[in-house]
Every structure is written in C-alpha cells, then in structure tokens.
Image (tube, rainbow, N blue to C red; front, side, top):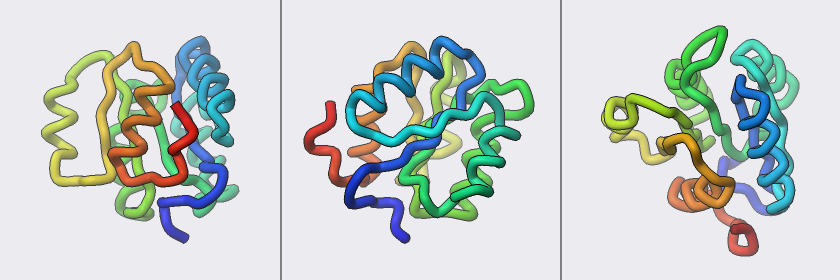
Length: 134
C-alpha cells in the first residue's frame, strides 16, 4: 500500500501534552481525517502493531516521556519509506531540518501550529486527496 491514499487518510498523532493532542485530533477530525492518538512512543508502537499499513501519515512531537520523536521518525521511515512524517517541536528547528533535509517525506513544524499547517505540510509531502481539507 502506498503512503499516498485515496479516500479518508488515517493519521497517527503522537503528543504527550493532552491539550495539544486533543486540539490537533479534534481539528483534523473536523477536516475529515481519521485520527488515532498516542500519548507516548510505547502507545504509538501499540497502534502501529495493530495496523501499521493503515496509516497515511504520522505527526509526532519531538520531546516525549519515553523517547525522542526524531529517533522514532528514523525508525518508521526505514520500515515504511512511503509514509510521511511531520515532526513538531518548540525548539531545535534548524537542527531537525538539517537532520532530515535529504528525506522528502519528512517535515518539521514549530509549536504552536494549526491543523491547517499540518495539512499544508502533508500536501508538500505528497499526500493527495486533500483538496477539500484546509
């Protein structure tokens, strides 16, 4: 299955801050996405084990209680090079952009961000069927 989906894209959101996670999930659902929320990398791994091929994209925070989102992105991109990953951070943006500059399926956004910014980045990363969203 390709990371570029036809139909309703399914996004995994990994964010330990409850308010940010709930706001992004709600906003993306309002825009028509199916969203699965994880509060940690361990929680994300459980969701991936349940249906890794079903995710169209992943949005992850960098600073998580049980690991770093950028290391997780490297793992996911090695396993599923077709799945776009958006890294969200409040710091070290230049370092992250440099770390992933050669990967056309990874984007970095700074906090605070909006669901519309996430959708715009998904478009840049090659996801289709987003014309009616944001």
